[in-house]
Amino acid sequence: MNTAPASSAAAGEPRWLTDEEQRVWRAYVDATTLLEDHLDRQLQRDAGMPHVYYGLLVKLAEAPRRRLRMTELAKDAKITRSRLSHAVARLEKNGWVRREDCPSDKRGQFAVLTDEGMEVLRRHAPGHVNAVRQAVFDRLTPEQQKSLGEIMGIVAEGLQPSEAGADLPWLR
Image (cartoon, rainbow, N blue to C red; front, side, top):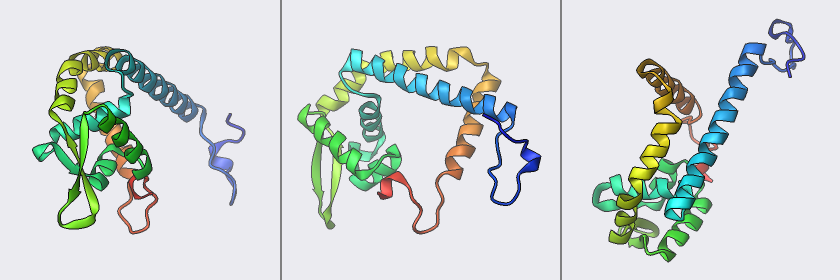
């Protein structure tokens, strides 16, 4: 709730959102929450996996030789290393991913998409793409799609500082 006008923020006072900023913020929160739930339910129903697991399989499928260092996969997926380790353990149990030791770094590991994991992606990608298209792209004009991409790029870039010690999920 906006309790003070933006121009009256004294030193130490929060810079409250304007009514329009509050409307935009709440629309964003509502849309992203509903979208993630929609995609998660679709993938759970159709593929037996949550959206984040599907995203990991996609990242691996797009990587050279269908393999990525675990640290790189965590960074690409924007998740903590702990969450990634748990997810990869579940994907390994399903036979969709396997881990391989890194020959150049005794502490490092690769996540590798198996043939079975690739087949799961092939089988379920059409339904997922349809869910994304219906939920997002079919509702927007080409201009709105372009604007959305630009806006989300700016937001994502601003949340990924490059300085040492940045508190990013994949560094935790």
